[in-house]
Every structure is written in structure tokens, then in C-alpha cells.
Length: 548
Image (cartoon, rainbow, N blue to C red; front, side, top):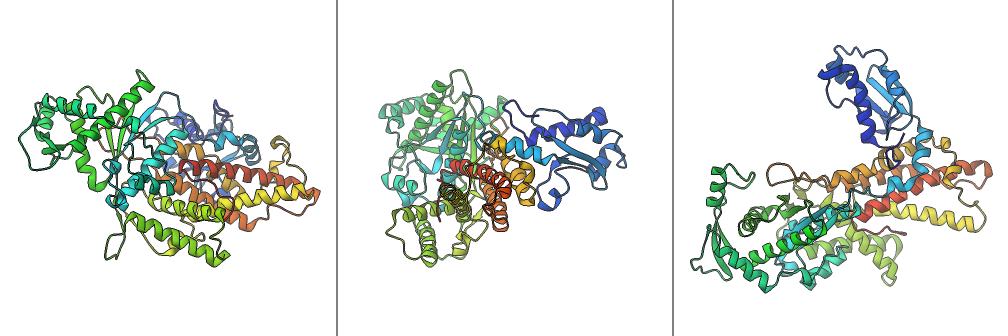
């Protein structure tokens, strides 16, 4: 059976399987015992497993109650695929799906699995990309800053694809930086209409004069407005048992500048837009910040709380990105040098393979997309809180290296070539027209790689995207973590599985009628793979390539 939207679901299947075990254990039962298999070796014999060790802990000496396998076979729950068999053996309880039926259910409804899941309307979020505040050109941005910008852009892409109303802050006025980000496929809003005005700044200054924690003694620093005594404020909160968890214990005196007030004024404008978008509903504020600026951003957070005590109504959360380092470099590498290096490496690799195509506009665009992909995957494939060590050698961005963005784009282009070849041959009468999905025989999909693609990539794709946007906004403390690396890792694994299958199986077979059934079933599977590729790349703001 399927979910309300007609979709099979890994998470719903696991809940149903665990429910069968819990029913046998009673109140003392544990939570999750079953897990989904993913390795090609294990998928040869099973799709889901409740390990013997876990069963022994629940039932004692592994004495699984009689009838539990039969109950699994009879499962008819929303989202649970058709089950072929369930057995109790040395490894534990193993379950295998009815694969031809599952192939048919998914491949006859590709859009249900390939498009991003839509969440309930009315959700809003402010993504505050801290490194872009007061940006004075590319020279002021480090590689760690670039990482935070790319994390913000990717989070915005995933959230927007799933129907969330995203407000990006700040508006970016610096034209040099805007042009550079455009090369990376980042379309950051200039939004002069959303930038704070002189009236906003004046209102913020007036609010500071009403704040009991601000002192206005003269300072030597240009643009300084006042000193804010944050330690006193946090101490008061503790006495009121309203302690703000997670703030650095070293926070003390904050020298407030006009630049910081403009930062808060722009956040306040974004918060008001969120409130207007969804009146009466909660919204979220997430500061995406590089590790070196995390301490200063806590000061800005508290400044906002102090001068607008009724705002923000939603908690502020801080998503901190770890540092980006390059081993054994004598001097720092700027973000422009990094971009130019990756671009030249990909260009030179292309010249070696295809010759000089610099006069071809389409090929110039391809190199540009590959450069953006290479940089995005380097910056986003590591969990955001961890350090990145960049390898500047060419091996890191080769289309033959299985961990790079270039490798992902290469396989995306191979898919495009496959369908272009079929279309051309069909127009010449070599192959018949593509049948309707309901007319295909999916029982012919018996290759190991075919099930690997369906079960590990197409079926769970929507749940991968949902994982990215599960920001723990309601958690205690001010720091949160997200999973922006999930999409990159998903695309890398999909590319590896597709590449292995494509190299081993001749999808467009001999033009013989008795072979057409299997060929079209395989092409329909490739259609699903292509659509998943495109949807995932969209969240990274990368266009699919048709050639490489």
C-alpha cells in the first residue's frame, strides 16, 4: 500500500516493521530494531533486517515468537511496499520485497518520487548569511566565508524546493561580489528596497538610549555608538530563571557600531516580512556563520534582543561552519584564486581530452558549470561543523574521481546522451516509440544494479531532502546543526551506482523486437534516475549538463 500521496516510503516501512515486533514485546519493548540494507552484497538476499543481536536483547536468547514472520508478510500499511518473504534465520529476521511489483509502483509514478516533497504552507525562515554583512568586496571574504555562503544558498534551495518561504539576509550591494557569486550559480538578492534606511538606524539608536545595559561614554573607534554590557544582561536572566542557554561565558562588553545596528535593522525588516507572510504563525531565524565570527554573532543576537525586546518572537539559532584550510601553503589563498585555479584545471583537462574549444559558447558554459559543481561539492560534502582540508591538486576535481562534483555532472551528461541517442534512433525508425509506463514489463529488471538504483536512490530521495530541512529550531541552546552534506553525498553515491551499471549493461540493445521489452523497462528506470538527478541538482542551483 502507499502513503496518502500514493508514495512508498522507507521510514513508514521501518515503523510498520518495528510495530510488529513491539506488538510481540509489549510495554517493555525497544524502539527501532529493523534497518534498511544498502550494500549490494546484502541486497542479494534481503532488503530489511532485524539483527539477531537486537532480537536476542528484546526476546531473550533470540527466541523470536512464533508467527512474527507471518505477521510481517501480512503487513498492509500506507507506504509499505509489497513483501515477498520474511524469514527468521542465523542473521536475524530478514525481509525481501516483491521487487517486480515495487519496480512497477515506482516507475509508473516517477514524479511522486523525483520531485521534492511539499510541506504544509505557511512556513517561513530568515537565513542570515553573516559573512555578507558589510561586505567590502571579494578581498574581505575568506574560504571559510565562502563555505558559509554556499551552505546558506544550498539550505535556501532545499527549503524553497519544498515550499518554504525563505528570506535571505543581507541584501548585497557590492557589485564585484555579486558577479563572483553569479559565477557560482548563486543569485543573491540585491533588494535595495529591503535594505535598512537612515530612519531605521535612527530608531535603533533611540532604542539603545532606552536600554539600561547601554552606556554612551565616548570611544576612539570610528562609528561606535555605545557600549553594551552583555554580562550584566545575561546575569539578570539567570537571576530571573530565564537563562539564555548556549551563549559564550566570555561575553562581556560589546562596542556597538553603526554597522552592527544596520545588521540588526535588516534582520528586523526580514522578521517583519515573515510575520506579514504568515500572520499568527511562527517563523525561524537562522544565522549561518563561519567559525571565526561565531562569537561576534552572539553579540549581535543579544543586541537584537535588547533593543527590540518584543522581537524576534521566534528563537534565534546559530549554524556554525567549520574552518576551511589548505595544508602546506605559504600564504592564504583568496576565494578568487581558488575559483580561478579550479576553472583552469577543468579547462586544461578538457583541452587535453577534446582539444581547444574556447570559441564554443556552449563548451565555455559547460566549464563554468563544472567549476561551480566542483567547488560546491568540495565545500558541501563535509558536515558543516567539521573542518575542511582542501586539496588543490587536479585529482580532486577529475571526472574520473568518484567524490567530485565534476564526476556527478559527467554522469548527468551521460544520461542526457543516452536519451538523445534513443530519440535520434527512434526518429530514424531503429527503435519503436516509447510505450506508456503501464505497458512495460518490469519483471525483466533483474540486474543487481537496477535494484540498487531504485532501492537506494529513487525510493528514498524525498526522505534525503527532508533530512536536510529538519532544523532543530525548538532545541535548547543557540547552536543547531543541519545536514547540507546529505544531497552531495546522495548524488555521489547515485553517480557511482549509475556509472557502475552503465559501464556493465548495454541499455540500448540490438533493435530486435523480442529485446524491446527489457530495453524500455531499463530506459524507464533511467528516466527516474535522470529526474532524481535533476531535482537534486536544482537544490544546489546547478543546471543539468547535456554534454561533457
